[in-house]
Image (cartoon, rainbow over the protein chains, first blue to last red):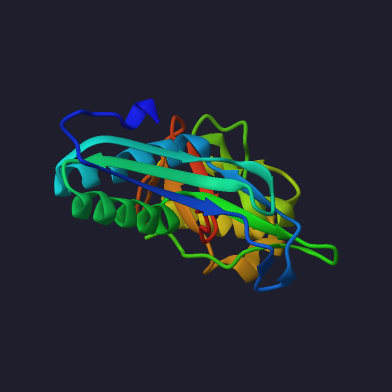
Length: 124
Length: 89
């Protein structure tokens, strides 16, 4: 949280994405996340920079985990520190929406019966 | 295609997620002549790995971490990857 501390800021918004116990293919035990790490890091910095251009953000943290994560574990954390709450909320929403559609990360849902890559969004 | 022709070279292509699973390797090598486009490379990949044909409209090709159009010219120094639809978050 120290990465999000700023005495000139009155708002910190945090979004956490967690592994759900169910998906399109039924009950989920865990999710395996894979990334094209080099490109993912470039794209995440690009999205962060866009957010910082759009809103007056004091501090910003985006972390996406990869590998196998069990139900309830956190796959992504986004933290935005800003002067007022609206820009923190809006920036958080912008970042998660764009991470989901623009960053080369893939998830495979693992259940007792099967292991299936999730349907996704084709990069443009 | 002769790979010993100096005009030809072996290009490494990274595969991710379902594409890697289908091919069984995270990196493949394709022999191409110099000055080829992304479209040419994609055609050669599908010839060598026909199991990817059912995914031909379900991936994009990145060159040096940027998604590119089919007419982009590839050089031997470029880092190429095939990227299926993303699902992070």
